[in-house]
Structure formats: C-alpha cells, structure tokens
Image (cartoon, rainbow, N blue to C red; front, side):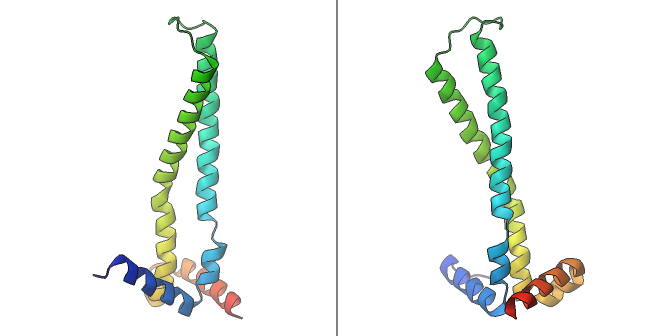
Amino acid sequence: YYKNYHRAAKDVAQLIDQSGVEPILHDDITTHLCASVGGCVSGIIILFTGYVLMEDRQGSSKYKTEISDLEMVQDMILAFILCYTLIFTVMEPLRASIKAVYVSFAQHPQSLSQAYPLIYQRLRRLSESNLS
C-alpha cells in the first residue's frame, strides 16, 4: 500500500517465503492452463480461417479474388497471433486473481478462512505438507 513497485514486490516475496506458500505457487498450473486454452482455441480458429480462405480460393465464393499461398499463410499466422494474444489477455484477470488468493493466504490467513473456508483448508493442508 502506497509503495513503489520494487518495494512492494520485495515485501510480497519475503511474505511468501516466510509463510510457506512458495511451493504452492511453483505447483500452480494456471499459467500453463491459460496458455494451453489459448493455443487450442486459436488453433481451432486457424482451422476455420484456413477453411474459409481455401473455399474462397477455390472460387466457391461470390467474390472472385486470387489468394496466393503466401497471403494465405500470412493471414493464418496473423489470425493465430491475434487470437492467442486476445485469449491470453482475457484470461489474465483469472490468473491474477488466483495469485491474489495465494498472497491473501500468506498475508491474512484468518480473513481468507472466514471468507472462503474451503479454499483456506486446502491451501493450509498444501502448505503444511510442503513445510514438513
């Protein structure tokens, strides 16, 4: 609170080291899950984009445009990059909120136990098993 980023990050790192939450953070799969979902959804969109471009290329469309191989590949790569970036950006608040729960567990475990007892019990059990 009212600290610069460097100082706040250092305080949070010390808090996590002292509370035993660090192994839980290392075992967290939300970042990998977000990347996998982004890749899968982007891949599906790329398949659809490729199909639409291929149909347009074969002349079944009412618009008669010539699409070269290079343009088709560039369009598909651009669509993948845009889709992946958009999906990962949309999922970032979810990932950040999960990390915030871990910091809340490290900083104020009693308030987390009152607000979300099930999450608190699971995090406490994981942190105790990692400390022993």
